[in-house]
Length: 394
Image (cartoon, rainbow, N blue to C red; front, top):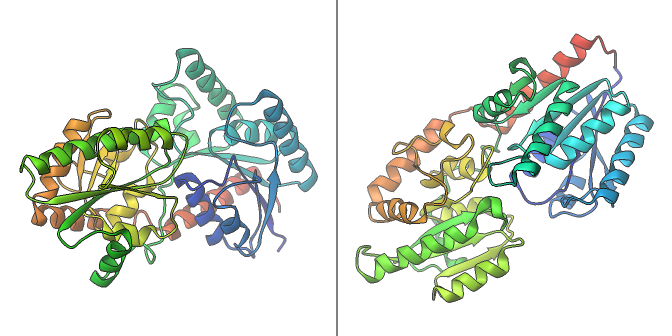
């Protein structure tokens, strides 16, 4: 049987949740059924990983990039358009905000039979200027009109889309993020010990960690404020322990983060680990995971930590509350409340039994709902359903 020609379009293969999920999906698809092509920017930390997936072709664009650039964006649009026309794809599936707009518009112009988009958190948010937010919402509405399906990873994003009239409820498909349950499983004590030793964490120290891109959305400066407050608690003996802090990632805010660490006198307590590919081991080293985001779809790092029984303290944004039950599988705090987050983290640091209870409960709460295999099966099933409905013969 001839294969289904499937094109994925994503802006850049940086080290983020959307990119990791897409590569997990691509790796899991049946290559005897699907001929998979990936269209993305020519640079990115995950580019080599994508290229190593068997049975996948990659088109690297020099014009598709994250920042808005009218000239490059126009060239990238026509590049995607001609690429679709030339290769006659049955399905065009876009990911990330810019690729979601340019890719779907190009697919429509090229008369692609099926057009699908995954929302990894909407392109608009309450922190944007009103006009910018209006333009993004308008563009999403336009693209929704000719999309065959919009995949959301949380009910929150579906409700938000429907409320803003970005297509009707029947357009949306809820397909949860999937993680590799074999890779992300509770680690043995020796793995934890070795990971802590590599980081320079002593036996009498507790470790609070966060993994995120250093950009405004993730609000990493609040993590440094939390670290400063917790350090003060230790000095005043409100916390009967020594605490270190691990920040995994990099990005445009790194300079401001380093400056804030210096101003707060935290140079010996905060570890800036950069981008890392050994996250299971780093989670094993942590006693608490923190995430200070201002907005989210559904953060993958929270799912990974929960799977590894690491208690979490996260801002209540996007679909986070659909997986983290406050006081049961973690703690939820309003965004931009570092003092309250510091108190919740401190409560966990002071109570070994509470950390263990929340960690075990979080892993049990995930069940099988967030496995990579389930995500792949549901996505492939959606492709087949749409193609069958359209009467497309591959």
